[in-house]
Image (cartoon, rainbow, N blue to C red; front, top):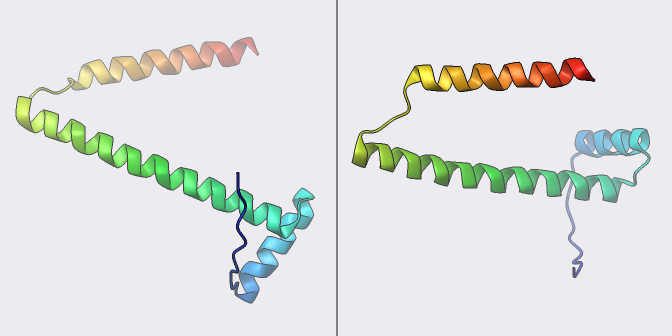
Length: 91
């Protein structure tokens, strides 16, 4: 991966927060800032993807009128929760 240098202007409060976080985590401010930027960029990509998926599902519902019944969703969620609880109790 090619690296490019960018200059950011930080206000004093943000600079102090980054310095404190970097000191607590043992990272340089630059490394911490890159981790934060990557994390935020990844989250924004996921959000954009979810928005597209939501719109596709909505359009499918509009065109077909078919939906998942509430009780089916509720049962599925209850089963997932029970499964997670069983796994947690084994640990």
